[in-house]
Length: 291
Length: 156
Ligand SMILES: Cc1cc2nc3c(=O)[nH]c(=O)nc-3n(C[C@H](O)[C@H](O)[C@H](O)COP(=O)(O)OP(=O)(O)OC[C@H]3O[C@@H](n4cnc5c(N)ncnc54)[C@H](O)[C@@H]3O)c2cc1C
Ligand code: FES
Ligand code: FES
Image (cartoon, rainbow over all chains, first blue to last red; front, side):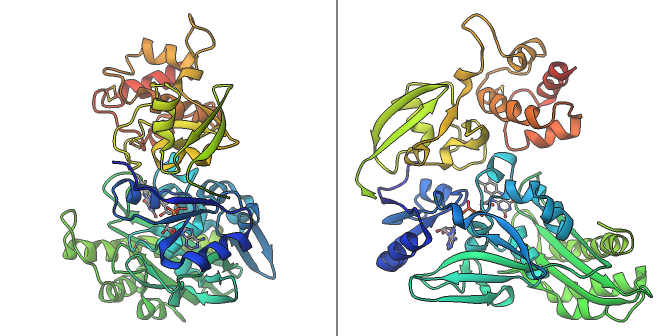
């Protein structure tokens, strides 16, 4: 099918885009990579009156590191993240996970900002940003604020952004030394959204005792789920198969799978357990030996 | 810049085109209906099948998930731009022909445009990498094996 008519505004600066959004509110949509918005428009699931194209705004794209934080512009494309040497060095969790997201042609267009603003509960990056304790920068024509990942995702396809706000950048703290991460998912075909996925982060001390752990899930609730009790159970422990099994059991209680024709709730919960154990094994290995 | 119709100036296969279009015109329809380059195919119009893949500033993208207006000032290459001359095929096209990499040919333009860019980045791919590269291109005929064979043949 074809999209319904709309007014097309090309924004050349953040200020222009924000002024247009302030004027049109819910009637206006930002166009980022278009890889979620355009299919929805082609099916006429959404019919925005106005599209504000962010693609020409070069200041919205880019990756920089300052004061132990990676700052990623909202219009940074998956492909740029996938190929970026700083991301690989400082947050390999992202580099490991990106090949799981869609297909090469989609990754050439899709952006981190569009992905997070879209807030698909089965999407990988919201869980990753949650696991990394990310902060999201929101700007409107008159204000600017920071929203913690834990507060940003409020439900399926729903975020804390107001109608006049743009997600402008994502800030991810670089992990301390002796940290290891892993992302694992199960999907029906390569590039599909996850039936269940987990982002695991562990930090060890010099005695190999776990000092910090985080476990965030995609596809297992109406938003990315952080399994706090499961992660807590690892802290202070010398990580072993028994510790992984206990965390996996607690994680299965924390997730809230919805079930579908492709996977029952029980199967999704089973996946949560298996993926948690495997991801913790890999993350711990990487914390000991790097990447 | 607000417009009812917008001007698109775009280079396609090295030829410059200028057209006035409705903002909602998809790039795939622009290429097929306005420019009459029907080699780019349309299967699903929601980004799943890959038949509409073209090179946009040298990177493969879904032309059904972009608006023609967004191509203003950019460079596009379609399957019509691959062959070096009217009587010669691109080496990958030769290999697809030789290895029976197509049957009905509906998916072929998208597969070619995807693989041409992939081989530039990965001149010596293994089978798993080739399969990952075409994971976003559906083929209902070949079962993919002969496409993989064609790529292996083209890099041998
Ligand atoms: C075949 C296919 C398979 C896919 N598989 C996966 C997958 O496995 N995993 C996955 O995560 N995704 C998948 N996707 C979706 C893809 O990742 C999208 O690129 C992503 O969800 C949206 O990013 P985008 O830049 O394309 O945003 P757009 O589609 O342009 O925008 C999405 C929404 O966010 C809003 N928006 C965009 N940017 C901003 C901003 N800066 N501030 C505020 N609002 C904004 C838009 O108005 C729109 O409502 C798939 C898509 C396709 C077509
Ligand atoms: S027509 Fe574009 S991906 Fe199917
Ligand atoms: S050759 Fe027929 S779909 Fe691929």
